[in-house]
Length: 276
Image 1 (tube, one colour):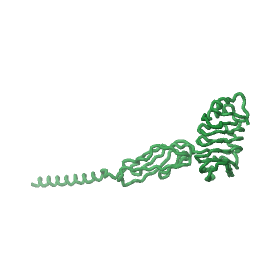
Image 2 (cartoon, rainbow, N blue to C red; image 1 turned 45 degrees about the vertical axis):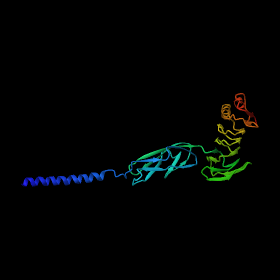
Image 3 (spheres, rainbow, N blue to C red; image 1 turned 30 degrees about the horizontal axis):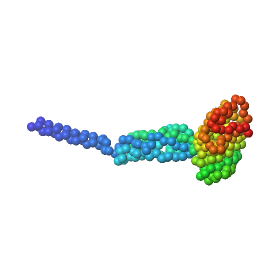
Image 4 (tube, rainbow, N blue to C red; image 1 turned 60 degrees about the horizontal axis):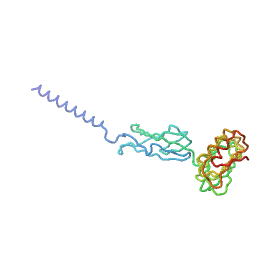
């Protein structure tokens, strides 16, 4: 009889242990509130220098308890990110990654930063004098010395700035800049290749060695005399001139040139090449 009672006690204890095991096992199961993944509203995007875009992260499942995330850019010199706000810093590519606090789940967006709509130049003197014309507004970024926004007019207007040092890059943001004169500023880098509204460009007496105007599809006058282009550099410049038929013709002033300069490259596109 005692043996039977002992056996029953063993059975009862075993059942109790099984209940404990079941109880703890259910506690370890996914209750539907653990993070299983994260999604971004964009997987890739283009962004201009100086502009921003917002990335939105959705933590999965929707009833997840911990929706905290962190953000990181693998190339902050190209694009930075803070709480999903991406800022274009310079041309190039950067991968923006969002990481969940729960489970370390990730999602990425590849951001391609493009040149700003407008133009930029790098002068070699402390005091610069620039002339602009057009319609709408222009925002001028004076390197690390702040920015100013102006309303453009049809007649060229002078913009002057005194720098505290050298090495500044001036950026003009405006979709309808039609005229630029940056002559005699010792400019060594000039980027106008994202401004299709530009009609007249004066960049005389600088130190420019490479000039690409292939996207300046409204250009009718280009004066680049005094930059001491080599024949090879001039021929490369001719190759970037557009071939659009424009009423009134198109003229490029290049200063002195010799037989090694192939002006026929420009002439075949309807340009008149003149010394000045």
